Image (cartoon, rainbow, N blue to C red; front, side, top):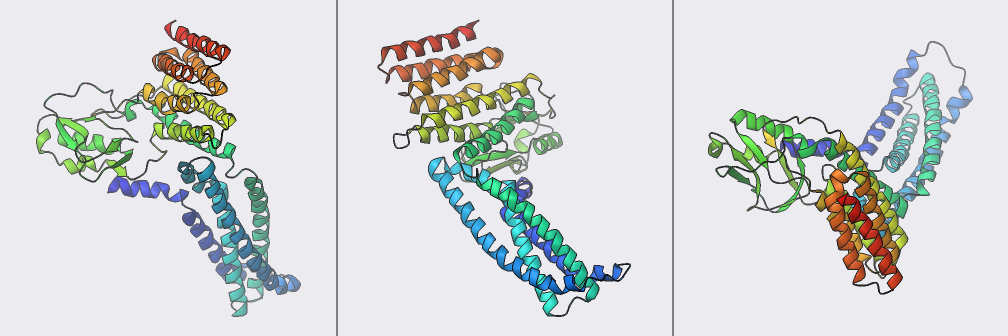
Length: 420
């Protein structure tokens, strides 16, 4: 429960309603505070024309912002639908968390409420002369803010929801998760070891779901409290069900501990998330490529762009793995992320769906060669296996002899670089 609350709070800034609520509260407070700030002015301002026109300005802002909000929402909904049909529905969570679109919508809504509150205050005689002057200057600041937001929003609309934008978003999320796992192998715990035969399994006690977060600090603290050692058998992204062990406990009294205290450190939800799951970003990238390679779309160029993005993701993982941080938790043996699984999630799926497209197969072999030559100690086994697998799939479909020979040469380069 504690982990679920922490996760919910951490996701609040990604919610559209949360940022809109903050902007709206600030706007209402600014409009209401004009009357309180007015008496603090050290002199009598002679701006009767400005103070008299503030009502008209606020009326224009209120009417225009209502139209802009409706237009912006329709554009965003259209972009979400386009992303679902052209890429994959899994990209929607990243689009919903977009800072620029949230700031634009929140600013428009905040301006609308600021204008409404100001108009109501003027109509009710809430403001004196000084208060109207303060409200006028606050309105000028809001207009400047709206102008800057509109310029940024127009620029955003030129790319928002386009294929390159979606690929970039997924690449950023995947790189972030992979970089974190490279810097913190085994989830910042101890390396996995053989689980003792007397270890006690702690199984999932709810319906099946997907692990989205593991609180290693809470696991270590609970293990220290009970004097046991924890052996994690799952990592974020894994499917769990009541019969599957989440972890094992060893040590004196391991069979008498409060199992729920350990379960509370593992959050199980219905959908995967990008936060701690390094494989999910690669899966979503491969889904975009698979959609592009389908006969209905037939867009190998997008698949090649996805392969380039995936290559950069693996590079981020390798660079972070070169300088890992020291393990922080001594009583928890974390799970190991298999490089072979990462390659299966990404390269093998694209090689399968693009088996008959020689340009896609060439780029697969080129990316594998780049990884094998740059970081052989990390990727040599997985790269050679993925290269052979991709070649076998291509040879089953491609009949043109020069293309077949070219792919064989490229695959052999990958294998040779791995063996050397």
